[in-house]
Length: 324
Ligand code: SF4
Image (tube, rainbow, N blue to C red; front, side, top):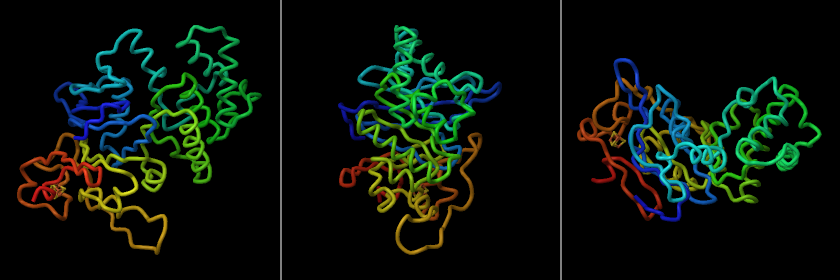
């Protein structure tokens, strides 16, 4: 794979399992990718492919029965999987923060939002309540909400404003990476666009990197610099968002691209992908996509393809057809 020593985060062979009483199910099977400084990196794939499991693993938020069971996550040259105690506390939120899917679930409904911001600030920085409040007001202004609203409760805000509050909380310690897991799902398209434009403007102003997860491929192409495509716990292709769906190397990327309407040009009939991804307990031998792949050849049924670099497209993909 392309090794970029200047990358902010370098993920190597990351494996995450779900551990039951009688079995261990591998949800993420040795994935490798990096996130550059100031980059917006997207993770795409069908529900259950492991995107959120990866995001939680990178933020060190995996909880039993989930277990990070192998690999390495290097952040600014340090091994994140070895962090504990104060170093782990500093990493979580101070260096990597999270915007969760549902703002109403992420915010405590019975605590005023000012307290939810100052709590984060004072937990990580030794400062007075007055200084923390000033910082909270600054963050509200940054995300376009008048600081007069700081004493309100979450239910007094619209869905879009609540999501902005979550972004303010994620930004308040100036992290280098923000993980956004479906940050605009459940919002209408106009609010969604406003929020995405605001995140882009903040990212350009403050220079943080973003790991962006969404089901909306159109949004992902517009918003991200590079995209990684996941299928059944594996990364099957990584490439620039400008070309990954125009010139896909992997049949799954191609099929995914044909499953959502183009943003421009004539209306086309959407193809979709027949069947569903395998259950974690019924992973097929060979290429995991082979039962649904219209291009499968004999070797696909018994050998797993590995990611190969395609420097010409600045891409990587895992498919036997690319080695013929
Ligand atoms: Fe299809 Fe084979 Fe490529 Fe898998 S390795 S995507 S089954 S052609």
